[in-house]
Amino acid sequence: MENNEKTRYSDSELQEFKDIILEKLRIAREELTSLTQSLSSPNSNGTDDTAGTFKTLEDGSATLEKEQTNQLAARQKKFIENLEAALVRIENKTYGVCRETGKLIQKERLRAVPHTTLSMEAKLKQY
Image (cartoon, rainbow, N blue to C red; front, side, top):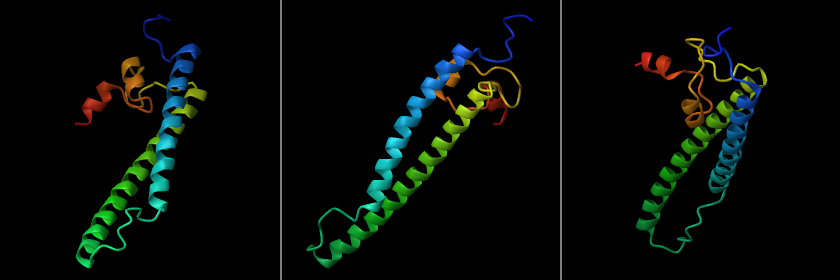
């Protein structure tokens, strides 16, 4: 078999990606924890003694902020799930193989988006 048409990444290459993913997971989980904490903490602006009109505005912006934080937290959870799925693919040695073309995804792309399952070629076909 020709070495230039590898069908999978070597164990040492997979280990490199695993390290990248584990680091991204660590950061993502920390961010999710802080998002979750900011959601569970009561409105900490200390504006209870402010006049009523401001209170309504405050509540509106606090609600919007909470919604945005909820969306960020949901996105972060999805990101964590994708990274965890990537770790499973590393264990199965199927990591870095495009699910559309069956070819290896370029290392640069995997370093940038370590949870991807599509090569650029396949991704561009989607548009």
